[in-house]
Image 1 (cartoon, rainbow, N blue to C red):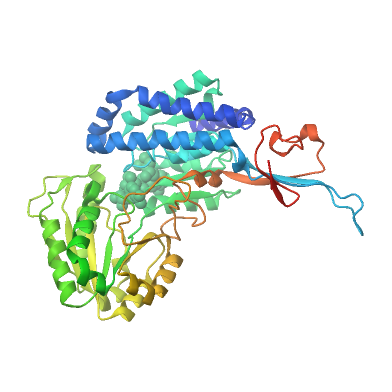
Image 2: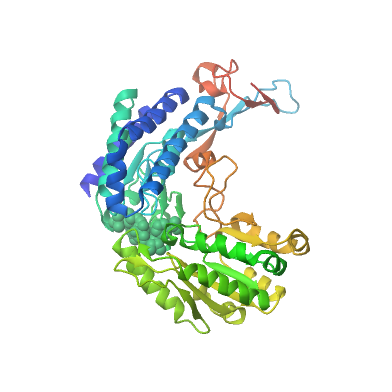
Length: 485
Ligand code: NAP
């Protein structure tokens, strides 16, 4: 594909210039992108509403989050210590051998291919966290637009182009690829100049891109955030104390955004009891009262109908409740199903994501069986425990087990609503992501697109500013084992 070749050649040429741009200049660029997106005003929101069917309030909030992310990365690269500079000066007199001067810091990988996500048209798409963390790192970006919101993507891409002009960045630091075909995505991942990939979407899509990358003569990292069931363990005393409140929280969390969040709670575990029966009725009532709503695109709506039906056909699964209102075409119906833990444990298919407003309640015979089911779960983005103080302590081994399974463990809350802050980890063991060591939310997301380099015995003039004795950038460094500015 000659056009893909030319895109990656342009990106590679821009990288040769952009990798040398200072942190402060990159910060101005990221800030200019945020301002340019804001300047697009209401027409951007209207376009996104038409293309994604998401409500105005959600899109305005998501645009705010996207600009705030850009500014958080801008602050990070202005301050500069993220490069993790470590300096060990020479010891010429050391016996039996002299110690060389060694200095290490993180440097950008090169051109990064980013796949926009359908369910976050701003925050995980064209100028979303993958793009802005890669640009902050000093990488160039080739953005494969998601076909479900092409005009939204085009408008945001134009805002980035404007910021490029305003701040004097190389033209091809960001290249927008509005083409929709698997062949294009595959060719972008396989091109030898591509050095990393960022993706949010289905397991099938993320795994396919991961496999293309692994099969290259030079394999590259793919940071794919894929499906997650986000299991919730509701302990017995919590149900005695506040089942009504828990039903309120979970009725809202399962159906928020028509269940189209990677953190939607898809599995709810409880121990068979009178209180669990009461909770089932309470949660069922909540879901019955919530109207079906239009999903992001026809493909996602079709997948929901298909995957929901397939989940409901599994042995031992019964439909407990669905919305009282009939769904219109392309709407997702809030749905709650139940199964005994015995059947859940024997059927791996029940641990597959149903993307949409569907959740499965699993009734265990006792806490031991609940823990057996927990131990069999695949990797997750999140896991949650709802419990009273004393039972949280009594079953602390459950929290320990869940920390092995998930990138974020929540106590007495809901997994939806991911806070954007430096302490957030949004990732998790496979199959939730392809690399559990990295996050796609928060400023640590920059670490996906860098690698460490040690500079041994370099003359001061040839060293990057971050590693010079004079510390012209005034950043924190580990200087001979002591943190110093
Ligand atoms: P998707 O099918 O995974 O597609 C996302 C992007 O990846 C698209 O740009 C698509 O290319 C590309 N792609 C997918 N498979 C590919 C392949 N084999 N080779 C090359 N490129 C490939 O995601 P979606 O369209 O947003 O939604 C479909 C399903 O994904 C949903 O029903 C849901 O189950 C899941 N999903 C999960 C999350 C999450 O947060 N975990 C988020 C969104 C969706 P094209 O542009 O050519 O189509």
